[in-house]
Length: 259
Image (cartoon, rainbow, N blue to C red; front, side, top):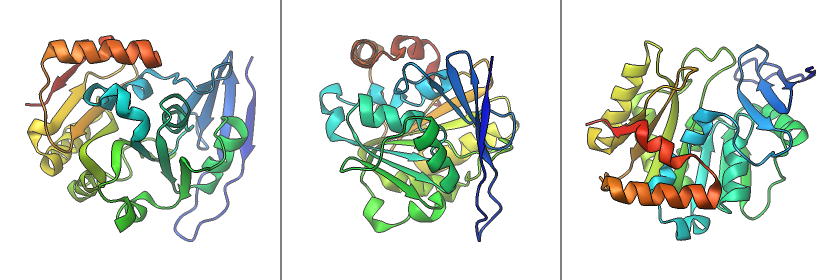
């Protein structure tokens, strides 16, 4: 049995924002932006775990980080969705966490229905247009894990997807920082998006997963490229699995550098 509730989105001077609603199916709660497209999900009995496979893969930047230092790092999400990444970074990884979301009703919905905590010294949810907010000097060079998942209510293509946008993303990253982006790997725009990311970061910095069953392809880009040996990646994957219960060893079978 499922249930569905709705929050009406207020009018924005920039655009008409879609209504925000959720549905329950079994033990999973789904976020929708006025359509049947799933914009995020939550396990109702484990609200700080990551339920969707592609969202788990968005954490692949951990493969390139010293696990012991993760709690001293800064994570940022462009696009809040159901707050799965924001909650995981804040609650499970104990990171300083910043999320930027344009739709105030998404933020309200996440706090009402998806267990997103209130802001504190480590958590900051900013209601803003990511394209503008990310260019503020205070954010530059401060982000160690950057998650980009910017789709509108129709989920047709990324809302921000230019080479300039990805260059600004690179500017957010610390020297060892890593960006992951959700793309639709079976969509015709995928190769164009991949090319723009490679233009901004350099092809040697870019890694990509195979598409999930639903067609989501996670692309990873490092600010400064490294090519760890497979044995080192496997060891790091083991640490990730034991510490944070993410399927990191499986990632390595589905994940490879672009060049």
